[in-house]
Image (cartoon, rainbow, N blue to C red; front, top):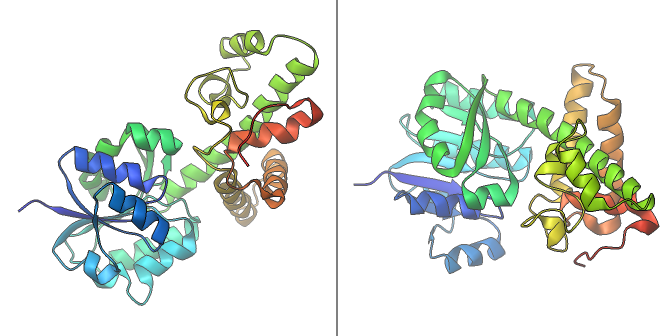
Length: 305
């Protein structure tokens, strides 16, 4: 009998991750509290469980979760119907949610007390990475748990990094997205400055890709349309990675920095900029739409309402 994977959270990221697992021949059963996400899962003909008990009613080899926040992960793993009290010692737990380090360690410690192997494995790469199975996984946990999880992660991703012990995956993700949020604003400032200076933006973009001003938002995920195919700026800023999610990750980074007395002046400013952008009703826009804030009255691109 094929091993059965339970997958909780089949939203914009989880849905294509499940698709890739199924394409590889894995047997997967899914659950999501959102009716909308359940309907999307039905359209894909996923095996859907109505609740956690139904999800775990058979012998589950692995549980994978992709949830919005630490409170959701805590409830799913440690709550009234918590997974940790329902699975066997042979079950591997993989939390792909980006959450605060403290909660990640708390959940992992409870799993360890039950002699259940667990990793935190947040991802980088957005919806495109999830669809194309090119995600980067940043893993925290024991070497043994990492080695067990790696073959599954390789089905859904391209780069698998073992960052350290439990919580280090989320710590690494927070550091990465702190830099990403700052650099997206920087890329937007540079390209919008070129526009105001009446310099061909495409030429400046090509120069920056091949010069010291290059960055991931410049070369892979440019914040203005017409510079690269297949990115949200070319699709009215429909989200690959939403501004709301970037805002959440920046807040996690700033909170973590305060706890260890780290100085993050640019990160704090980026957090303020994204917070204001989201408060103005832009949480569901792609995070590259922050170029609208930077561009002011010179920004004249299409954006979905």
